[in-house]
Image 1 (cartoon, one colour):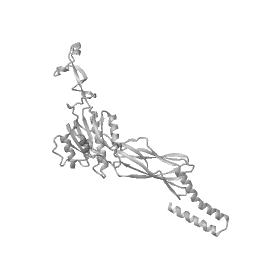
Image 2 (cartoon, one colour):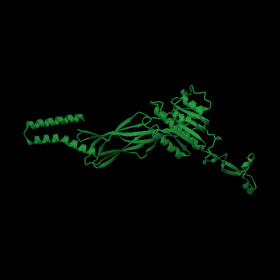
Image 3 (cartoon, one colour):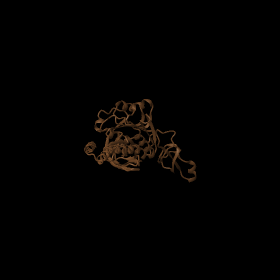
Image 4 (cartoon, one colour):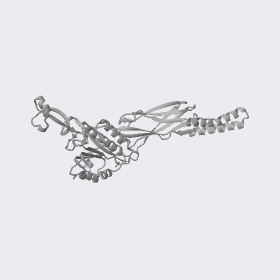
Length: 397
């Protein structure tokens, strides 16, 4: 563009010399036209710039990882002047990472028209993909002037995590929620407040479970199977505090979120209602959500991902445990990327639970087990980044 300006200036100087050397009217007309062209180009392009709007259009704000999703750049020109060449500079990044990727889109912009330019993005990791237009450069037909517009037009897309298969044992302990009204549809239990099934008497059945009124009508002993509460106090604490800033930050966050998703799915498959606790940066406090079905789980995972801000601020779990001085569960599981001995000691000594686990996400599972020991009831489970199924085996929860 600088070369074009230089050539045009030379052209004006030549026309000026032509006008001085020759007295014909043609030389004057030529000089006026050449001198007026930049002014006309400037006015036309400026008017077009003032009447151009830019926005992003995304069909689905929640997309799966490792799959392309379309994003449209919508450019609307309400003026009567077309733009022969426009250049859009697009930037995007995952909120869990500070690595910004960028590319350029080249397009003409028609007069009195709205056009859509579609491009594809994808992400290997879950999180929020922030997309923005750094600028849209508009060029006049002669490429003399450049106007910049559409700065920082933004949109967000949530890339959802994938679940992984986990093996383990779900224990149905004696701890129950006395206010429970959620019972298993498939397994009997010992809660006399709800009858699970009626069946014939088997040797060894307790006499107090015999349904005497129905037995008298059937001329055979009929036994009541009581129900099994499935919303016993079972808690997953997700520590989302960023302990590493570098190339491993994004994979670690991805593994943290996919671990809580996989563990929660495992519990639901075994009819075990539970709660998930995490720090929600958008409201600046720890929140707790009860999960009884897949719709609850999807909503919680979406909230976890969308709660993050660019600074990745997260309150330390220590603050939560200071506020909650007496915690009692059937099982308690911490999911974190920190091997903070103080936090682990607090869980081991002060949280009452039949089963206590600490799932520690790291880039190397071997290094985290060194020096980890001496806990009375806390089970340490190291999880290598991206290897959830292989790392979590036979968890007791």
